[in-house]
Image 1 (spheres, rainbow, N blue to C red):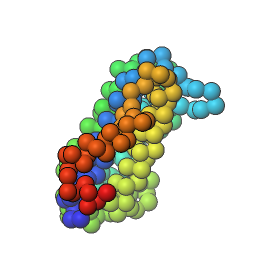
Image 2 (spheres, helix red, strand yellow):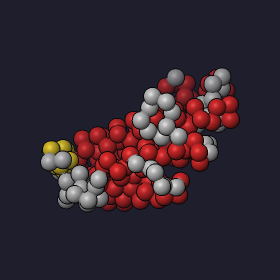
Image 3 (cartoon, rainbow, N blue to C red):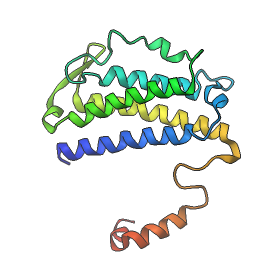
Image 4 (cartoon, helix red, strand yellow):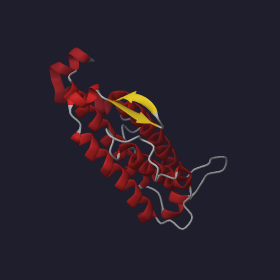
Length: 183
């Protein structure tokens, strides 16, 4: 895979995770958005605020500054008292806007560069994969919490249970020979 194709794939994976989180969070009430289930340490709101703050820090001036910015106070990302769903969403949207702007600006030549996170050097692809893994981890948390709170009203974000064969049939019809060769 060439550098631009890899960057395009990464862009798609980030979009996928952002979309999953937003679609999951949309299925819960404002009260549940802020609820921390027993034995856990974070709500959907907390996780979204943290991911927004992390993206803001890691991606702002991605190629030229350390990924842990001096103006970041990570601990406050886990405090949501006095916050609203709109204020959390604003923080989330800001972080993602910065991430997508920096990702869009990257070129295949940038993949040969080194960036730092907390003073530790990383190749650009390694730093991106590290951040994508972080986003993936929190996507799973958000989806699981939302699914718990939505209960029977949950609308699947992927293939609903019991619908796999229906999807496979549609894929066979859509992709025909390609599907058969790769099945």
